[in-house]
Amino acid sequence: MTTKFVEEAKLLEDAGASLLDFTNSGPVVGAAVAASVSIPVIGGFGGGPWLDGRMRMAHAAVGYAASNLDSRIENYANVANIVFDAMVAYVEDVRAAAGRARPYYRIYRHVLFHGQPDQFTSPDFLRPVAAR
Image (cartoon, rainbow, N blue to C red; front, side):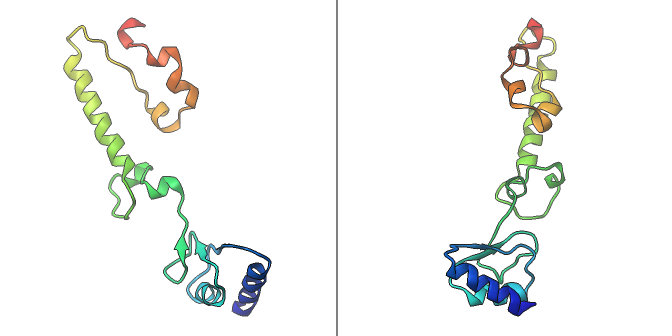
């Protein structure tokens, strides 16, 4: 099987490919393919240090999912914690302003995590709760 993948990689390189995406390559076949061509060989899931680079889903790279709240996986950022901390601060502000006349804005959980773009700009969404 390794020989077949190496041959295909060389054919793709000869045909003008500038990069190969070899997801699920594994350390044996992936390393052999990467060593056999002069173009970069990258991969996602199942790729490793034997390849020239690794593809990641954007939301995984920035730690967007709720599963990242207590994750020890290294990411470029931990957006889940940033959003969580911002929402805690927001709730504290709303509670502190509850007895004052200052209007506050309602933010819905489904908009933050599952909303459609038009929900963010709809007049009703942006109107202060006290004015509704």
